[in-house]
Amino acid sequence: MRHGAIPGSRGAVRPLRLFGDPALRAPCEEVTAYDAELARLIEDLYATMYAAHGVGLAANQIGVGLRVFVFDCPDDEDHRHLGHVVNPRPVAADGVTVRGPEGCLSLPGLEAGTPRHDHVVIEGATMTGEPVRIEGTGFFARCLQHECDHLDGGLFIDRLAGLRRRRALRAIRRAPWAPTGGADAVEA
Image 1 (cartoon, rainbow, N blue to C red):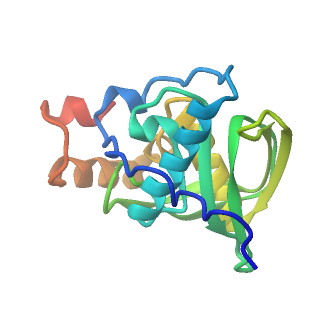
Image 2: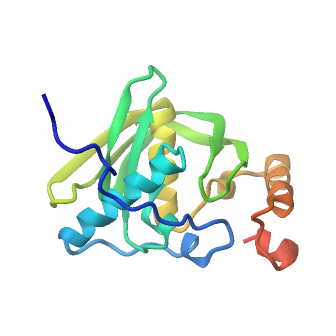
């Protein structure tokens, strides 16, 4: 029995924006039109996320400044969570704060222990404008918080401090995809 198309199967893989690209630091605009263009963007986000072997992807990571992200992410019990959120807003972030490994498709190869809440609730809409509420724990909560940060112009390295932050910035400066402009470009 067929249950519809696989998310992203009709989408185009778009180039990922890498650290240093201004699109990653600009807060995204609210989506106001729930139309075919939005549906196409969501398909492209899925296609790009799967091609890059990610578990989540925000629209600004492909250069689109709209508040939308997709995910296909397990939680700590290995339950799969698949979906998208338009105009997401965190309504709860609580539980213990856990420092866990975190990476980003826009900072390829970089990973650092990043503090995140172990439980989060996100509210928003589907691509058709229907209200949606998503609750995540563990790794899935980390994913939801990570993608919401992207839509506000944030990166996981912004949550690092001290030695972890210095090591991450040093790794960025040495990366083959590092932005030009020296250390100042990396300290963004």
